[in-house]
Length: 103
Image (cartoon, rainbow, N blue to C red; front, side, top):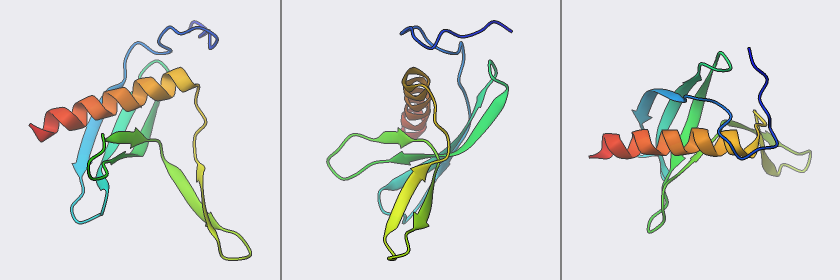
C-alpha cells in the first residue's frame, strides 16, 4: 500500500463509496444519515449527518459524540479527526449522493 502525502492538495483517496443514505423525518434540520466506505483505507464510516437549515445550503458532518460537563453544559466532540482534504472529499460525496436522491 502506497503512503499518502497529507501535505498536498491532491485527493487523499481515489474513491469514496456512499453505501447508504437514510432520510430522516421530523428531526428538525437533520435530513439524513449516510454510510460511506473508503476502499483505500479499508474502513467504513457510519452516521455522517446531512443537515439543512431553512434558507441555507445543506452540509455534511462527520460523526460526533455529545457529553456533559460537571456543570451540566452540553458539548460535542468529533469521533474522527481526518485531514481536511479527506473530510471535504467525504462530505462532498455524501452531499452529491443526498442531492441526487432528492430528485
